[in-house]
Amino acid sequence: QSVLTQPPSVSAAPGQKVTISCSGSGSNIGNNYVSWYQQLPGTAPQLLIYDNNKRPSGIPDRFSGSKSGTSATLGITGLQTGDEADYYCGTWDSSLSAGIFGGGTKLTVL
Amino acid sequence: EVQLVESGGGLIQPGGSLRVSCVVSGFTVSSNYMSWVRQAPGKGLEWVSVLYRGGDTYYADSVKGRFTISRDNSKNTLFLQMNSLRAEDTAVYYCARGLVATVWGFDYWGRGTLVTVSS
Image (cartoon, rainbow over all chains, first blue to last red; front, top):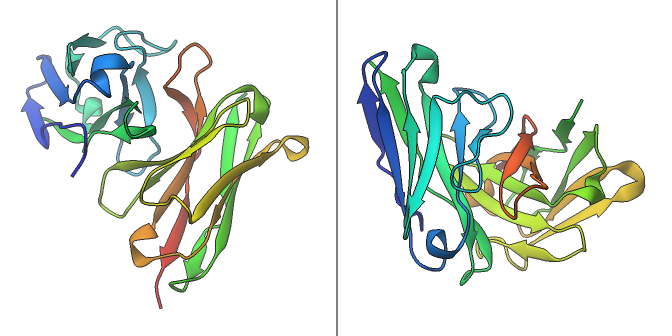
């Protein structure tokens, strides 16, 4: 069981918006930056968001991130079928002195 | 162009040892923090270890005392030495580059190398 809790799956129609939550604690999300990754089937993860809400160059602004207290959220607007993937949140846990990932959320674009 | 290429995976018996490598290009392996992340078949991502620029290392509890992360600056290569391997270590092992602009975030990943621990 992951230290960070994500919903196993979310779904929405093309063009719609979806949010994916990531819940942690004070030793991880509460006091450290959160990053988000997209993993398309059969490929390596790709960085979508870092420092809670910053996008690397090349990542469209349809993807956004936010953090409040011990939870973080990834938002995706204008859903496309190509967005179907697994999404992971990640951060550092200061108590564990270890990196951690959420269990992952499978996005289905209906 | 930044590239990370893992190698060294394969089939190994329980209790055995294996060293996986990650050759990087387009940057210097010592200029960024670097991590290993693994993914068991059909499962999620699991962080394994990090090596900071200054040489500090950290490990997941599941591998502490068995795995060692290191780098060879002359070869621009990151390593993960894995000892006392168990069936639950079976996974694709990815190396990932830490994003300099932040304390935690990985902007480039290799394609991974599969390690299978089985008799």
